Length: 403
Image 1 (cartoon, rainbow, N blue to C red):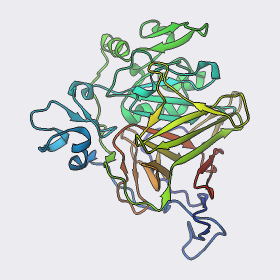
Image 2: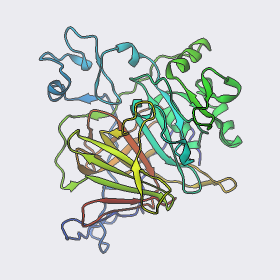
Image 3: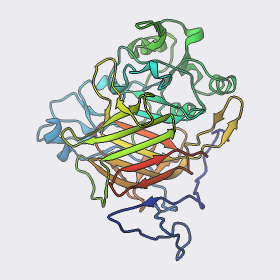
Image 4: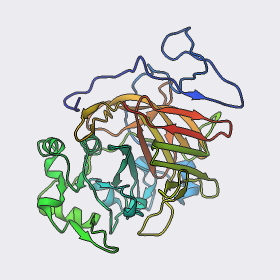
């Protein structure tokens, strides 16, 4: 089913439960039917938690002030007296150049495969990154740039159906290489068609080829992309991106979240490892050289490790749309279960996307807002049949399964 029109509230009555092993104690809890129980299974979220309408990006400025040097005077909407800065609604951080936040975000498709395309350019400059399944056990990134410019972003590859939802969600400009004809048709006929650009017929700029090591990569420059759309007469005014909640101090949790190992297939797996020294998660990726070998994933622009303040797994239906070639329809609308990581801790959450044009946000199972840590967020989209376990070593193991 392809997203179109108003989206109805979706509750997965038969959602699978998660197996959580904590301190050798196995809790037996019912997930859907009051009073019922399932052996050795624990639901990470209440399946019928109420929808909470997003109203604004909530930031505890008193907690943020020491970290961001905001001073003692806080004003409404994240402004500070004597400052031209403003709160970025996608990161909860202060952006000194307010004009950046007045423009549309840019969504760019960035490849993970083939392996010789690594390391990628520009991912560390994105405010939000989505990783999603493509086909054949592989995954790909959709990187959202808003508060920072990136001189080089890539390698850029083809779009998927899920990108249609992401572009609508963030009112974004969209850059991609190409796509299957069925996906192209939907993009070309969408209300945002004028905001979507692919290599042909756009050409260079804004999408150019570079060949530093004989790979002939397709890349873009976020400033050149903005200029291209401006020349095309596209409205670049930023949409309302409020909805996420941020707090500097983490909520209490009984679940540790220091290490998360994720497998999309036997050939595609990675790990997020929490570094308490910097308060961020670092990404390592399989190298292809060994069955379990992982190497740090870096940004080719900076040479630094890819890192994030928040890692969030969203359980989303992945029905098959076509078999040849394989196309999945990742249905990132309505609401569903999730697992969020920040500050070395884990939290059961619900993800909510009640409207096509509106930022996805998180709540706790009781419906109260879940606070992201100020900073970047990486969302991992996994199927509702995926297996989520926490082992005796307190490391999380997440194995992707569709649908």
